[in-house]
Image (cartoon, rainbow, N blue to C red; front, side):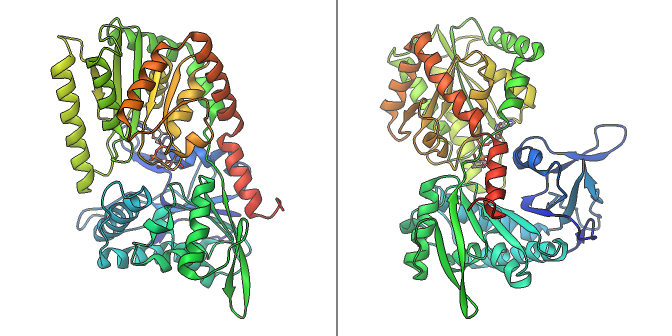
Length: 478
Ligand code: ADQ
């Protein structure tokens, strides 16, 4: 295990996440590292600008036997970069195993069966220790550390042990489950204690924060009150704040990109390429069993079969970005979805005119925004989702306040985006009715809804999320 990167220890804010915000590109004459598009780094970028910050994470490199890892840059656009190296075995056990085979399904209502393996938990513990050691070595005296997401839930306590001088924040990007589910976890106590090492534990929703506080009561015998819980600390106690901080997007950035003539022209071209229909339904997701992609495909095809939607009038585009392909459940969901797309198109498509256009590939930002501009109805039907940024991105791109969002009530986003067509994704008939209802709404009704949605997305944007979290952590909010 090696740690690489700057060691002057002068950065003011340390961000810790499983992945570094960089990717290696050798497609130019000069092979080099560059910022990876999207994700957490874009979210944090505005807040990181103007303060010294270092990001600690894994670069994603797994060199073959005998090969060296590529040296990371010390800095990228002013952001300090510190790489944590992981072995192939650690990635398999810690990341694909415990993080994505146990925690991910458990935290998403166990919609797939979580698998609890002791060896995988040991690797999770070991890798969390590596991250905590890297931060302890980097963070300046009295500095602020912001730890991200379910892969690193033991880091706050490990870090507090090593560096009690630090101010430690943790944010969970996925849901925190009700205690009845969380209690399944053989290492429930360790995870709760790990998180309680932080000064501030943030969740996407009020429910997530309450579930966590409830778990500290039920499983640790603590006595939370309001948005705080006191935890034993030496001979006294320490107060941990527990609150919801719903994540937002760079709404202005999406809006500006959507307005460019290139994107507008591409959106028109896309609609032409997909045939002469009146309404385009769109789904955009990481290919994940929590996203309810099958739900919307079923609802769409039934709506066509039953004449709720007119096949000559509508089409659907489903984009699924490849994800966690080494985890078995993900291979299965891919097969299921592709079988379903094939069936629907076999039954309902015509030559050159499929009912569902399906892409299983990453899409460049401009192209994705053109899809948002082109689509009349966005379908977001997860069985459970921490927030769901796709819904917010679509809304930010609807610059003329048209379009509709069908949104699962089990997303964090549904708590904010009340003017969407909110559905229970387990109720296919209700999803079908929502499709018909969105398709049949008057332009005035859709504009009325979209104006509200845009106000939500622009007000609670990512800049606000970062500022609120850090201000709460750094104590400027009482
Ligand atoms: P995700 O589960 O990845 O995030 P989501 O919030 O929808 O889910 O973010 C997906 C991102 O990937 C979006 O920014 C989207 O634009 C992008 N994307 C999707 N398909 C793509 C494609 N084919 N090509 C390129 N980009 C694509 C986790 C949690 C969420 C939470 C976020 C942020 O599961 O609930 O909202 O973190 O906290």
